[in-house]
Length: 203
Image 1 (cartoon, rainbow, N blue to C red):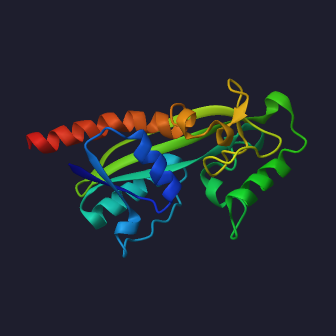
Image 2 (image 1 turned 90 degrees about the vertical axis):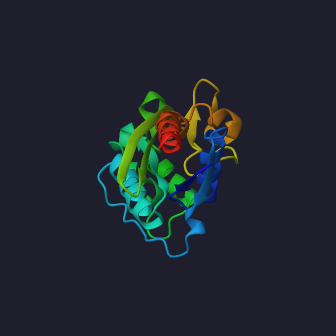
Image 3 (image 1 turned 45 degrees about the horizontal axis):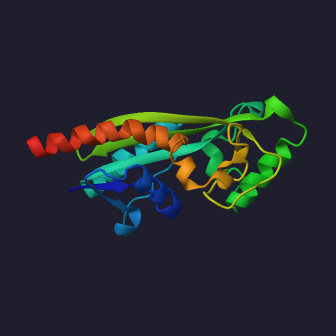
């Protein structure tokens, strides 16, 4: 069984990743298992850059296969914002609620098809020798006019999927995990992880 360190302390994000990678011969660990793990400055210009930084730095520290992930929401009417600043969109005292309220306030005079947006997720894999691979996934939607639903986290209460006429937070994990940006990225990452596992076994 290969151990995979997920470079996050976000318990909800870890649960999502575990669910999507279910069935693989992996034991997933979060950074909570490594008390003195170094902090990674997410100062890259893209989601991929940030994901790679996390994976490489934590792989060097742990000496294990490490998954770095960076994701966020890009709103077309805001020229792609909040983008890589999604988690800290509302400033120093950030929270999911504050981030969503700021987003809705900025879009108060924006209607219909002009509220298009997409979630992006970049996943990087690295071991102590360096980068193993990096992939990206995407999910398109609209920004709702008010938060709805209680499932998920981040911008899920305002990320509206026209096909279901519901937000991610209303749809719940079962449907979200089969169509989200994280799902699409991790589906690609599974192939990289599987090849890595086989390589380790063969030697």
